[in-house]
Image (cartoon, rainbow, N blue to C red; front, side):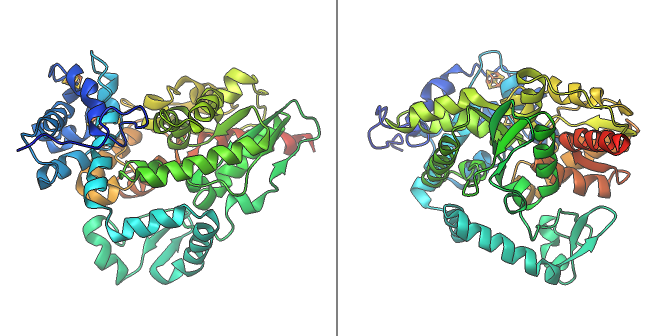
Length: 449
Ligand code: SF4
Ligand code: SF4
C-alpha cells in the first residue's frame, strides 16, 4: 500500500486540518508508555486496547506509512470513537498533541469521502446565521409534536412513537433534554447592554447552546456583568463557534464560521471577549489560532482574540475582581469540571471561587469532578452506550456528595447531566454556576427594596 500523499505536504499555506503530514511530529512523540490508558474515559468503559490513545496514534502512524488505508472502516471507527476530551493529554509525559492528530484524521476522511448528507445540510445552514436562526425557531415552534414537557425538570422527552424510533440511540421516552427556546438569548436583549456606571466594555460570545437552549443562563451572565459595571456587547450575527463542525472534520465550514465570528467581535470595538461555555472559549483561545496559523489575514486576528478571551469565571475573578454577593442562596452544590473548560482553558479554581463566595452555598466535591460526563457533542448519539455508562458513573458520583444542585460551566455537559441525573441520580437541579451568582445578586436587590 502506498503512503498517504496529500497536496503540498508541509506547505506554509496549510495547517494540519489540510494536510495529515503536519501531525507527523506529534505522532513521533508517542513513546507508547500507556499513561493515557489510566485516564481515557472511553477505555474505562470499552476496556479495549484499540480505544486507547496510543492505539489510535499507532493506527495514524500506519496510515501515514501506507501500511493501512484511510478507507479502512476500522480506521474511521477508531478515529471517531473518541470524545476529544483531552484527558489523555493531561497525563502524557511527552505532551503528544493528540487533539491535533484526531482532528487531522477526521478532516482527511471528510476530504476523501465527503460528509453524510444530513451533516452537510446542517453544517451549511450554520454558515448562514439568519437561516440557522429561522430553522431553530421553526424547530422550537413544532417541537411539541414530537416531545412532551416536564415542568419540574424544565425538560422535554420524546413522545411515542418517536421514542420507539429513537430508542436505539438513546432518544427513548425517558430521555430528558432542554427545550429549544422560541425566543433566543440574542433576541431577548439589545445588542449593547449598558449599566448606569461603565467601568469596562466586553463582547459576549453566546455560542448556540446558550442562545437556543439555555437563554436564561445567558441572561444571568449579562446580569452579573452589568451588576459589576460592565457594558456588554452581544453581536446579533455571531455564528456557532464551530467546534461541532471541527470535530466532524469539516474544515471549510469551521473556518467560515470562525471568520464571521472574528469579524463580528472586531466590529464591537471591545478589548475583552467573554464566554459562558468551555467549548466556545476553547475555540477562541486555541482552535481559531490553529485553524488560521497559515492565513495571511486571520492569523493575527485569531491570535489577538485568543489572548483576550476569558471564561466568565476567569474574567470575574482575575480581570475585574467581581463584587462579592450578599444574597442568601441556600444550596448544597457540587461542581462538574467540563473537559473543555478544565483541560483546554485550564479553568477550574475560578468557578469554585465564585460558588464559595455565595452566602448559603455549601460546596461538596465529587470523588472525580473532572472525569468526562460522556457528552462529547454528538458522541452521545453516535456512541450512545459508552456515553450513557459515563453519564451513569457521573450521576453516581454526584449522588454520593449529597448535593441538591450540580453546577457546570458548559451547556453541552448541562444537557448530558440533565438526562443522567434524571435517570440515575436524584433529580438534582443542573445549573450554570453563573446562575447561582446572578441569583445571589437578585436576592440582595430584593432585600434592599
Ligand atoms: S501517554 Fe502519551 S506518550 Fe504515553 S502512550 Fe499515551 S499518548 Fe503515547
Ligand atoms: S481525547 Fe479523551 S476519549 Fe479521546 S483518546 Fe484521549 S482520553 Fe480517550
